[in-house]
Image 1 (cartoon, rainbow, N blue to C red):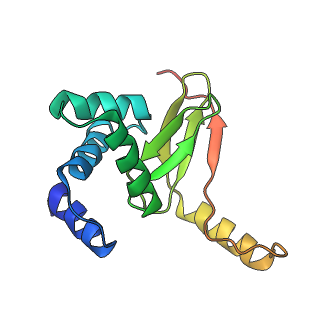
Image 2 (cartoon, rainbow, N blue to C red):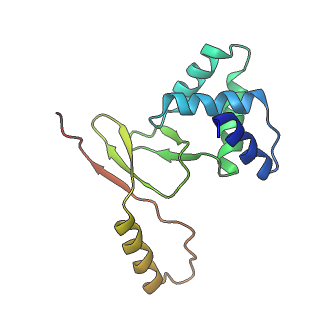
Image 3 (cartoon, helix red, strand yellow):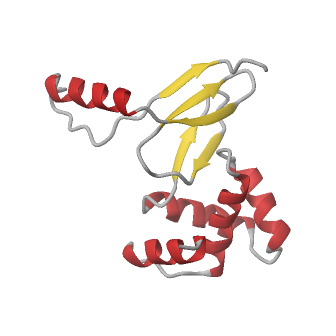
Length: 140
């Protein structure tokens, strides 16, 4: 299924209209692919769609996030970054370079799931557990 068709289907399921702005922002996220920040997304969108305003891009990012189509993550440097991968995963974060990489491990997910099933947190219902593993990527 092409990206456009998948996005169209997802937007429809969420009760959202398919607009050129939403498609442009989502395509920019896919093209940039490494958890881009707002400035990077705006630059990419404007490169191909100069008539879309920055305000529209901000609003579109908010809408896509609110409806679970993309997610936000914040780095130690305070930059808000975006992720188009919604399936369960974690992140490796290098605070020296501000680089973020997706990290998936079924055993870790099971360990976390089992732990929180057995260790309930009083007065709190866990919806999801996401880790940001901080370290340094080795050169080479």
